[in-house]
Image (cartoon, rainbow, N blue to C red; front, side, top):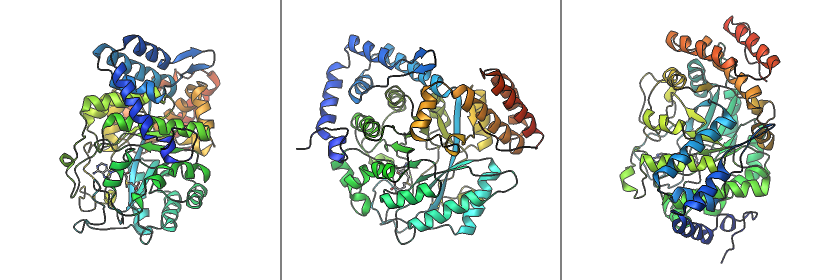
Length: 482
Ligand code: SAM
């Protein structure tokens, strides 16, 4: 039987089923152990030091105890600490992005995804480079600077060369003041060699959702195609790191398996990356199964309520304090509002999940991956974020300045975010407001920026940011960054 070993490169050892089961038993036995829960909460709390805040994070066992706990006052405390951690490391900034679907050709059999090979009804489509350009122009005209490209797995229709060509095209389009400055990639698990090619193409984060950490369920949910190989999929992030990509994004598709099992597996995966590569996941996504072409979410037994969903998100924030937490437009405005108070740091806006969807006037459904709950425009999302006290950030500076992997983490940990990310967020927000926003959003935005500038501790940095913001408003300058 496989032994638990976070440093091992073998999936069955770092995502060890026996250890997950023991963790769930431990969590269940201690879910009302107030003394232990208080100890864990104390450990999770951000501590102020001379150089900023530090946070210990939690082990998968500790975090699982919090997730199992159903004492209302303790849950409130978990939520409070989640917000404190988010504010300590990320401030009130929320990073904005959009997905870009390149192709829905797929040879896998994933039972929750309408792109599965057996679906003969869905329209199959793959963007040409001209179509990629047109989509990128549409996205730039909305104001986007950061994309996550998405594609099904199909070595014939979507080989790595096609993905690389698309990335190249995306970076090459400059429409008016527009530019896509960071392309994150969400494609199927691949080889070290291909990860190296993606790294060389200048990608930001490599994102791959585990879907489920439960091996038996995984094999049933992925009955055919290359994705059926659980170990190859689970070990993908190690190959990505070996290929030189040091920002990787984890995720679970909640609803497929029991959430407590998934949660323990997810935190163990983060621990494994930290133990082996010295850097944890750059992001963690928390998607839930949605209705899609031939997919009925009701057919999956493990759906979770909004309250459990909130608790999972907050517990992730306590366990992995430095990671970015992503919530997509799969979720409604109401759910997103709640989660933004519990540690989420990235949201998508104005998203379309169909291939070629951004160039169509009406939201197309024929090639769509799943229904989008939050169908507001990017302008509406930006305005709403600011009205709720957040700063929408279009910043992509860290990765372009080489602050990836552990260099990003050390910036985060040293409390330099307010002197670096905050001014960058305000400058990129000014770009957005000047170039793309409605009059109403502009008005709110410029008032917010004025107030937020006063929070920059270093006077010299503040002065540079103010000068740049003035220049951007006069359309004299774009893309300055700290
Ligand atoms: N083909 C790649 C792979 O296998 O990882 C890219 C993934 S796909 C374009 C992006 C993600 O969408 C999947 O990893 C899955 O978690 C999610 N997804 C698939 N079907 C979904 C559904 N019905 N509702 C919500 N999310 C879904």
